[in-house]
Amino acid sequence: MARIIVVTSGKGGVGKTTTSASFATGLAMRGHKTAVIDFDVGLRNLDLIMGCERRVVYDFINVIQGEANLNQALIKDKQVEQLYVLAASQTRDKDALTQEGVERVLTDLGNMGFEYIVCDSPAGIETGALMAMHFADDALVVTNPEVSSVRDSDRILGMLSSKTRRAMTGAEPIKEHLLITRYNPLRVNQGQMLSLQDIQDILRIPLIGVIPESEAVLQASNQGVPAVHMEGSDVAEAYKDVIDRFMGQEKPLRFTEPPKQSLLKRLFGGR
Amino acid sequence: MSFFSFFLGEKKKTASLAKERLQIILAHERVGRNPAQRDYLPDLQRELIAVISKYIQINPNDIKVNLERQDNLEVLEVKIELPEKAAASAV
Image (cartoon, rainbow over all chains, first blue to last red):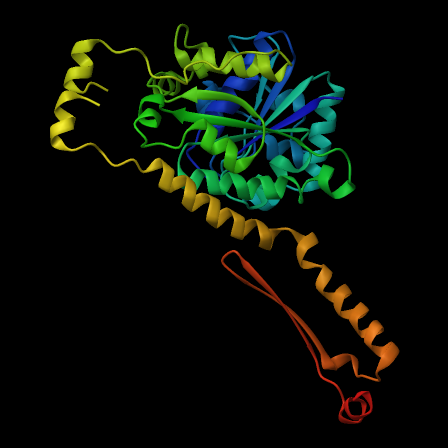
């Protein structure tokens, strides 16, 4: 059986797709056969972030509706062995995403030997988001240190514990992991941004990592390369730590304190 | 704090305000979301009717159970209307 991980947040623009791409890539880099699926029917973007947008022939909905098989629709990553992308449909409406169809695809992926299936949820709480989380074993709840994102994450946590298969069958609950993204330690120290402790106090789920706000993320998406590939960047390192923790390793948090500043910068208020 | 920002006035520390506001609104939203907390009202009403019926003949419709929430305060209101005859004999 494959382990199914949903990357979710409720709010848009917090880093779900960035996280899905880097998390799936990181798992595959460690030698695990991994598929990452875009559930954002009508507004697909995972293909762009993964840099495979020109190789999309068949998509997730084509497979659900039997117009293509999984082998035709899965896009093999060019950089990492064992990594495959399943794009969302750009044209059809989201009603095509049925629970039976999604279950069949996930089961088939498991039978094909996939160890991890990463489900990139769309924003909102509509069908796409519900389908992405329904069969999950784990949830990465992506949250920005900002009031609307924290509130939406709380809402999503409520749905994870009531509207998913594990919740409805009374099985062991979905394992929830808090991932804080776009974190700016300097602004936290200045009292202008919710701290990771604040967010944990409010959401009360275990923290799996903190991704610092960084220009490397835009640099990565410009090129269609998952951020985890940005060698030497704090973002890549932070994502690798997330994977290690997901695999059960103990890793101290990094990039959660502001970088040391020179006297000159401090004097003139550098950022 | 930089030398200049000291004179120009430091930016407001707003993070604590954000946390406080979130804690209040989420406490409110979580209550409405949790079905276990909402569902006990019909049971409570049924059992109240059963207990009261042991002593007084009443109509099930004469018992009203209502839960109201205002900010952090919850008010459970139970209204039992006794029929006139029963009220007279109970005295």
